[in-house]
Length: 572
Image 1: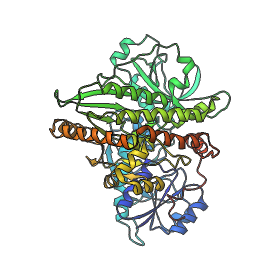
Image 2 (image 1 turned 135 degrees about the vertical axis):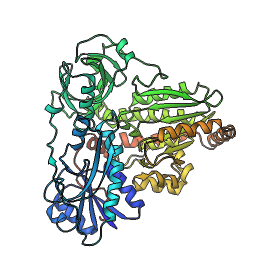
Image 3 (image 1 turned 30 degrees about the vertical axis):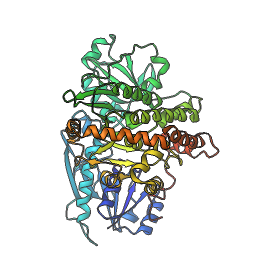
Image 4 (image 1 turned 90 degrees about the vertical axis):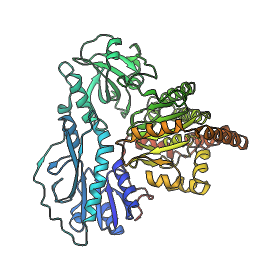
């Protein structure tokens, strides 16, 4: 079929549909929902059999839905209507939720239902994490069912769901009462608002929106200073520890409001309130510790002596890696190198393995009067150090386990490992050009061609399209697709890594790996790849072409698109 994805943004759901529907053999083009006239033009140019709307913030124009089938993906079960469907489901503690694919009509979420899927609400998950995993998986299945029913002139026999309209959730309904709300209530409100819009609150007497919350462990509570509910009493990494009526929560990210009217960015809480929290005690934790105590980094080991597997987890908010985070991760890798393991697993976050450098932090430097170019260079140097630390682990096998999506520099960090494992739902964007024509670093000029060849490497970097796990496997960017989805992937990774560590043949593999690295180094040192990449990156950061700085500014401030990129809009 010929399909048009009409979407407000090319988000995780739109990308997954783009990847999977193309893999099914359909012709798919994308139009960003900019204006009715633009949508009408896209439909006239592409002449789609069906328009699929995975993520909209306005109605599809009647001139389009009245002339051809338009299917809207709604993150709620049949009968649920309104823009805050998932927010309400998380806040009210629903045990089961769903995704509905319904026909666009003149009213929001009220048309005939073509397909729907139910899913269990993952315990303690944020709204944004549920959206990227359970909602996306259910939506792909439901869209496939819906379009399989289509024939020219087909009419859905399902009656419109009566249901009820749930209004947008207000900040008053999200508000935290620090003098009354327990930790469980505080976390539920923050998880229901994660991603967007956050919870409007204040810190140190300054208005701010709060995001990225984690419960304090018993050990945190024993070590932290006392305080009244609402008091900020300690810090760790990006986060501030705030007392509740019965315990405490870590607040990882905030959007601090500025009195001068300057744009506000979502930043690490300790960055946004650096001066205010400088005197707070820091509560560091060891890299090896129990699961209960939160930090961005954690290391654990599995298996018997002589066949040990080390797992280094790094869960950075939205997959962005700041200079600070990169330096911490590089230091952790050096510590892990001292452990007696045969296999090391690099285990990124459940939503994102990594998305490369931290554009919000770089933009914040610019807003604060610093140099965005200097901040960009420092960040890319720091992430290069992470890639080098991975490449330097030549005395054992290294596995990159993609629990979540990967983009830009994050894709090439994964390629620094000996093998890349993923599940079927993972989407990768192995390119940089969408961010103002960036050249890219992370040793990609060494890592990518040795996996896929020079010609295919150039095509991937030019193409700028997302790749599903199975396509990435065929191309050589992924070595194994272990499970159909995220469920069961962690266990499958450990099982396979333990088998690899116990395999007597792995000693020979390590020897071959080390010999190849030495041979490659003689042909051209890693330092030469890095210097050439950074030479090109300095032109992006400091050169006459401001494309990168413009693209970064538009990205972090969520500036509306003026047109659809031509690599997505095939019809144009």
